Length: 485
Image (cartoon, rainbow, N blue to C red; front, side, top):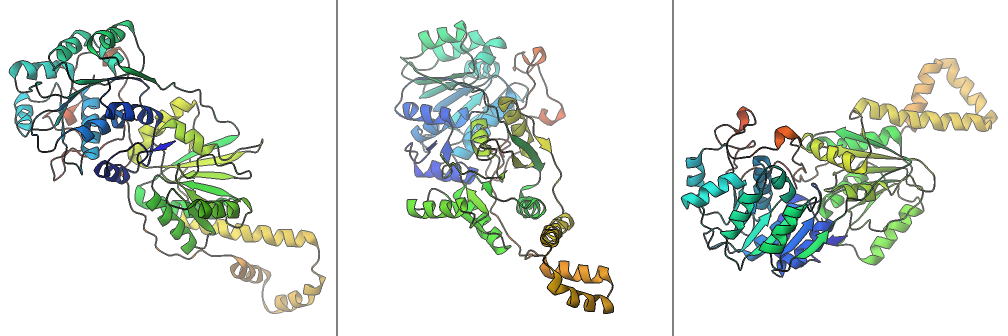
């Protein structure tokens, strides 16, 4: 995997990516960003959920000027949901550079959109029908557009937008940069690439057949603030021999590691800021069983090959299915079985379903373990140790003392006292993990009913009437994030 730092991304965007919880690029991002930042036209063939928005969004934001209050970039998307979601992510990526994106789509009041356009966003994300309306009214001017993006081009073809796309591109200055993304490459899309793009670089990220064997996969739906307690409770109940906990950021790796140590677990963390010597030292401790929990980022765990890992925990769900398969593949090796448990916030359930679809595997929902269950789990570990000691049958020297105890106390009380004395109760130390934004994806249905123009003829229930996308606006006027594409 490649980090965004290695791709030469500037500090303001790196800061935004860190706050979004991303450190490494997905394959489509790693291959697209270098070409796009050099000004090349690009054709990217990739499925939904591979991180296409950042692949075209980062180069756009790098190129655009904050103080140039005119439309410099245009993204054309097939549906209003996708337009809203792409604009949300572009606003998050452009937050520290001051680059703003505005979604424009059918079904929202035209006058409201015209007022928003007067606020001079640098990027407009639009559905084709409504965009042409604005171009004809001259409320969207195309003469300063430097980059045009066609997102999910094959879907726009299916919905009957192909002529609109040609008209839009013909109305934009010829010296523009064009980036086209499509899951498939039918003839009509190939014709656009041939006639309306300049020697485009082609990138194809094949949807891999990703299957996972010998691994029981589970997920726990849990709000962000309860993740850490859920993790330690699960450890107390299941007592994994060797476990890896994956998190999306270096900061959270440090926080989770410190929190687990505070609660009495033998844990160490690895991430990209560690020296190679420190990293190898931690890995050797883990291999030799001197620590029971390894907390890691994807980058740090690259190429990790440790036998005997019984559990993998996705404290933060990864942003793409390939990373998921890479992570959970750390267990279930050499014919052994393993368990993978993913913590998913309510807003990330759709992303989980996408991972299940691509990996062709089903995760079983389990309930978050309670504190009482965790306490019972700790006691059960002690019970098993006592039974093992009984099986060794080397207790004669203790019989006399045991009889004396039973003369003055009932057997239940004696055993309960022994359990209390031997059980390693966790320190109930409060642990705070800094929050990151959830990953979510569009989950719009794909069928005949969805293949109609997004030009005001369709509505998606009351939540979109009145022109405000779900989630509303935050105090700075940017759309609140609902997903990470």
